[in-house]
Image (tube, rainbow, N blue to C red; front, side, top):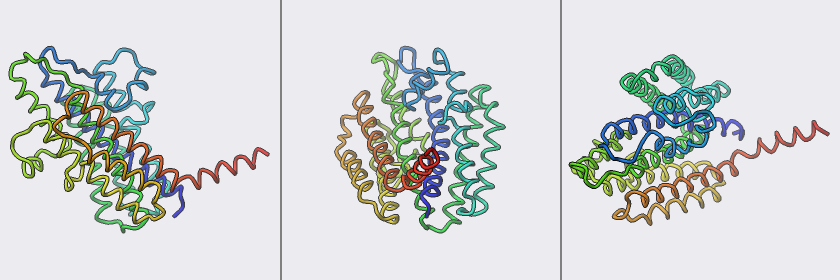
Amino acid sequence: MLSRVAESLYWMARYLERAENTARLINSTTQTILDLPRGASFGWDGLLRVAGLDKLYGEHYGQPNEDDIMRFLIADERNPSSIVSCIHIARENTRTFREVLPMEIWERINSLYLYAQQQAPLALNGRGKRYEVLNGIIERRQSVIGLLIGSMSQDLAYQFIKLGRNIERADMTTRIVDVNSAVRLPDDAPGVEALRERLWMNTLNALSAYQMYRQHVGVHVNGSDVVRFLLADAHFPRTLQHCLAEIESCLTELGRYEAPMGVARMAWRRLESIRYDNVDGSALHDVLDHLQSDLGALHAAITQQYFTLHQQQAAGDMESQSQ
């Protein structure tokens, strides 16, 4: 497979996954803020920090406020990680290499793009409409993945799609979990323990994980059990451990995997070293920050191993033309 085709498929999958999980992150943060008592130290600017977009936001907007942050995260195409931007980029990658994919995939992604373009302005008109539109994006994107799984041969093209999807999913899961690490509740807040339980339920719901948590962990929700489940459960498809296992499976199928596999094993070792009785507040944030760095290093290793050939060729062509 040509490395430029592989890279486009990888990024198509990443951007689609990012669009869905940004919608999940916004819905989770919205519910968290609605549940917070007076005196809690978390606001909309916390969402920007969790997403890693606070500096880019500052280049285009003034003081953080809900309306501007929603516009930036949902519809602002100056932000390459906004939902509209992610779907647009994924659509362009799909259009360029449609012959590699089942024909219906282009139609489904184009439909998602049109929905996002039409509905994004409406999502800025209040929390109720925003929740409805974001759920519509989540559902339509899930239908794309369902179609891919059900109608595409699991060849090299499929492995690059699966690879991109799981790297992005692992990263975004850590960011959704990180929302709670940024919340500081006043110790004298009435029913503070019940409130903490409610916040962790919001995290589980954001990842469509609440029912599976109840089945495999228990009916009582607490921070350490939720974090352990969302990072280290081997069977739920949005956990970090499950995503890493899928990534290793893809690398094995692709071959020439020694360098990226070594980085993936470093992420495994960090994950296995976590002590879940001590994951709260800043300690949890530090753990998640290190895991995100590991995933960034894994992406860099994958890029170096599989995608640099066409980049080097393009650079060589430009150099020849300039001589």
